Image (cartoon, rainbow, N blue to C red; front, top):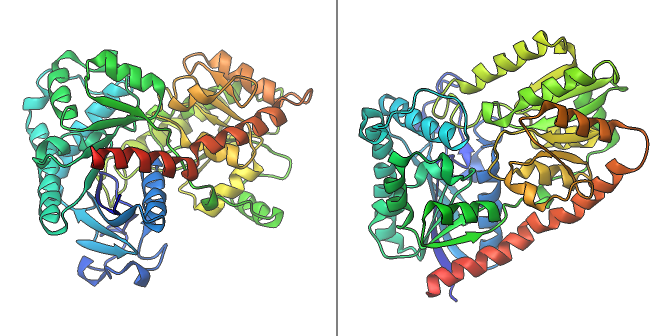
Length: 457
């Protein structure tokens, strides 16, 4: 098979640029040559699982000669029109701040519904509202840009990522192969009846839908989708994670307010109600007397949707304030550290310093932070409603719990905090072995095979 020309589409951009409030520099002065930009000053890489997967995969498949040319289209209202990376051209879409609000409302309605969260009353006429018109406008604008690029580049394949972009395949109007990767949880029972027909129409525009677990593949079948559904586990590149020296770890954790005798429990997640950090705070409050040095570290800030340079939604700040008040009400405010955004080096240091990590989400599409913890040889407690849970054997490579039962999370934390036995060591090493199933080496093989099948079909 000849090397492919591929168009990638995500909502979240690979690179985020400072908002107008953060820098007075106009967009036209920002270089569109990545090699001339300075990390931390001109841009930062977007956090989150989608971009952490897609960028390493693109680089690997380009290096392996599987992909020849990549164009990556995403929503990025505060960025130059294009940014050129080696082998990858980023194309940034903007729809105007007056339209972003309606788009954001529809996106959040879909998000909260699929995750089973409380939100605004669900409108049976969602797809006839003015807000949905803005959501459609964004997708149509994106599709038109992709179509214009296709006229110049002649793509072999379109790779569309995540629920925000679902209508894109239907809008492209081409018979070329289209792959859609669904990153969030999928439970057919949580899709409102009035949404089903339109969702089905959008899904059938794709040659294959990729999901993160066997559970989700079964759910798509239950939903009634007749097309191909392929399970491919999400992945990360182990080479992006490092083991800092004890001196480096000490410097970072001291700056975060972690003392030398503290026992650190780590939660790595953006500030979002779906991530369930409040459950970890509740469990901490029940253990505080027995373990006086126990500290809970909540690492992470908002997503692209919450960033001022992104959609500017306020949920991350609202959720952070809720967590702070929750900790105060339970008498553990002095035991909870909220770090905000952390760099990769800081994150490596926090993993190295923690006793174990927790993924406390109510629902979670997969949970790449579990793989990160395993790469650092740290045990992890995982909500049984995460996609990654199907890889875990309780007591062998992790511990599972029901996120709706605070007693169960507390009990599993006690098991790891107990000085007797070698449970923590056993599940950490078992997890490290399991992490190979979610490495970029495994992904490059599986993705190359799948995408090759699509092009050759």
